[in-house]
Length: 176
Image 1 (cartoon, rainbow, N blue to C red):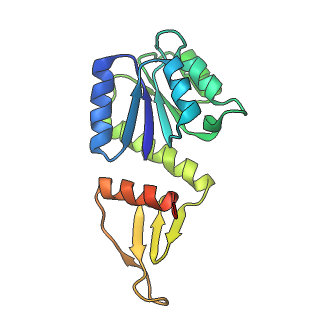
Image 2 (image 1 turned 30 degrees about the vertical axis):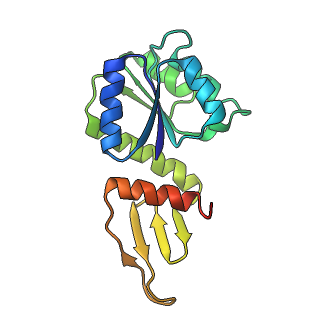
């Protein structure tokens, strides 16, 4: 899964990027809302993690702009990850289009669980099961199987996080 991380604090961003990369995500990091907007015009991501306190355009404005109907990223899940913990900040972030809101400091396992939940919900809107040749990949349940004979039942395949990410990417973009 490809993730856009929008965070201006280099130390925080490098820690988040390391943790997400180790969990199997391909992470692109930018340090401003303006840079994120530029990247989103050229690139496609599966999910975005956005800080509110960005220089220039803040994360709330970026999230609002990402939800415009003429933008390709309008359906991409957005998780706001910020130190702002006031109720009105959380409500405003969600009302402007964020799918989830998480307050710093945070624990990496919770961030990973929230990202998985966002991705499951967004993929469920499309198709949760991908098929290519004898392979079947269930993105909602993170399960993959292979059919060894035309009428045989699917045999499960165990994959690590990176193997899963690579196979999922290939199947989503098949037959390219």
